[in-house]
Image (cartoon, rainbow, N blue to C red; front, side, top):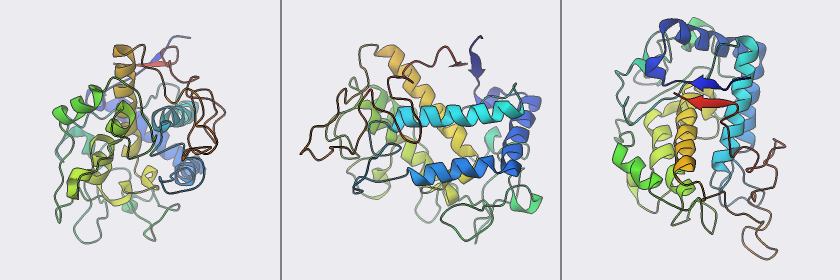
Length: 289
C-alpha cells in the first residue's frame, strides 16, 4: 500500500476540511476521542516524577507522539479512509486571522471572561464537543490566543532554526534541563525567565492557551495539527542528519538519576509496544506534502 500524505492545513480543500472535522466529531461521539485525552493525561509526567517518563521532558517525546499521532490517525481513517492529520506551520500561519481558525475548521479564539470558544464545529453551543475528561470543571473548549494579560507570540522561523541546527538528537541528563540536543530544543524547555522559558513546541501550547495548557491539551483538536508539524520537523531533521540516531541508545545504568526513568532506543514506550527504533522511519506509512 502506498504511503498517504499529510498536507499543510492551509492547502486543504473545503471538502478535505469538512471530512477531517467530520471524522474527529465521529470519534468524539463514539467515546474514542476521550480515550486519547485520557492517554495523554496518564503519560504527561514531569522531570520530578519518580516513574518512567515517555511523553514529555524525555528523549522519547518525539517518537512517543509520532506513535500517538499515528494511532489517532488510524482511528480517523477507520471512520473515513480519505482523512489524514494535516499540519499547522505556526511560523507561517501565526495570527488569529489564519484560515486554521475558520468557522468551518478549528473555530476561533475564546471570548473574554471565561475564554469559551463560540465559533466553529467544536464550540460547546453547537452541542458536539462537551469536555468530559481533564483538569477543568468547565464543559466547554477554551482558548486565550497570545495571553493578552502577559503577551506571548508564536515561535518564529529563526527560533525554530536554532532547534533544527542541533546536530545531536538528545543529551544527558535526558530531561528538560538538557543544554544541547535537538529534542529538548524542539520541545522548548529553557532556563530563561518569563515568557522566554517557552520555545517552539511549548510556546505554541502557551500561545493558544485555555485547554491547550497542560496534560488535557488533547481536548483542543488543534493539538493534532500542532503535533503533526512537530513530527514533520523531526522528519526533516532525520533526513538532514541520517547518522544522528535516537539517544540514549542503551538504558541509563543502575544508580544513575535516570535509571528506569527514560526509554532507550530499543525499549517499548508505554502504553505502546513499539520502541523509538520501530518508529524512526515513517516513510512506508505516510509522508508530508
